Length: 590
Image (cartoon, rainbow, N blue to C red; front, side, top):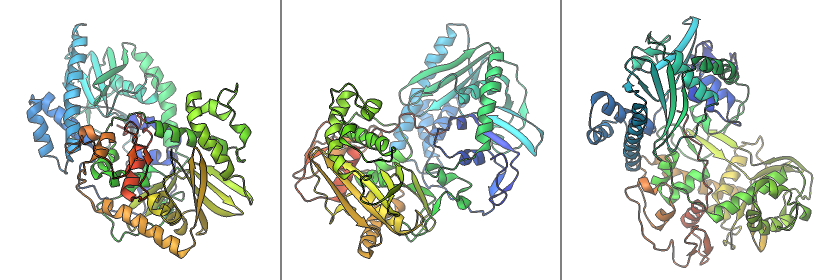
């Protein structure tokens, strides 16, 4: 979007302030979000007052504040930590505070190690308070700047410059990616900002010249693992300039051009949200009667985490690193879903020939997605799927969309709602929204309790009834697979009783979360499986049962037997325990 639509924005699109980390956008991310974000003088024509969370949402910022006190004020870490946390503008959750403490100690240990390595080469670095920037333009009205966010170090004579990028979990960057090359370029040719507070306010930013370095280093530091990775360490500044010209400039041009909208997690912060034609607007979708504290994003996954423990939901929402153990139940579910997604993209019904014996020479789709042992565990479920494959008919099946991302904005609640159906299709022109669920044994989910036990179904009914898909007519299905059975439950999104039940279920799930500002822990046996429990001061090590009569696999958390009296919270905990590991490379863009 080199020239954003005039009907959507006002201001100056020729002023660009690009953070190098924004170049790490992935395939499938919203291109227009990044293109607008990089233009600080562009505003939506429909203005709105931004509201901020009453709690700390940027733990890395407090880490930086602590490290500033240590490196620039010579404050002892044990003094800088409580002072910084105590003076924080917003409330810091106890779990967040624990991670910040860990991150600061870890960073300083890594810093000592890096300093020792360079000292062995006769190089001494000192922290630099002033960040560096590359900027230029024919006038302030046509100004482009490139910035980086992290910590700067330099030798006293200016011959060596080192930039350190902070990662929540572990280093994961590469030397040949545009973001790293952009960071090296800023280190090599950038000037120091005169006043750091003006870095993101002034255009142009007042700067002061610095000596041209002879050696440039770019290092990533993992604040949880306590590891570092030297991505760039070179004296060839021409190589840095060449990489900038050949790789960074084209990547920047593509980013600034935009050209594709993909509603999702970015929408809550996007300046184009109010006028985005690709984002469904559904006032009243959640049934809430107030706008909460600020604009937030919610999904059934958020709901599950919150039902299990509000503290867990909060720490995971902030993307604090966790300790995820490989779960056979989660892996099995992932493999079943991946196979079905790939198979359904062919837009034809699944057949027995698609599922050869495990020892066959060619296992087709499975060989592309998993190892043979994994296929052996998934195949019994997939065989049961054949009888209930949604592409079998009856009726004409069109508009097949496996695993689409759905986003809708509820303006009354000021909440961005995300959903990820397993399959959308139309049968005889009517929308059908399907969810799939695998379990080792039948879970006792029936037509009478399914909306409560599997709230994804309730949200699906609400999305259809609210017109998110263009009309208000549709069906919602639950496909339940075990190694010995397959069953499909169907709900009519036009049935008043179904819609009423669905609304009550969704409201019951979202209202406590929407009003919560403390996110207190509710410790219990589920703490054993909570990935962020290491940061939680309330975590329990109890080995009590989740509920009387439930048999739980002690290694995976999967419920193997049920007393028949299902409970929504227990089901949420069970679903949380069986969640697949998140993407370890999914880090905030800093």
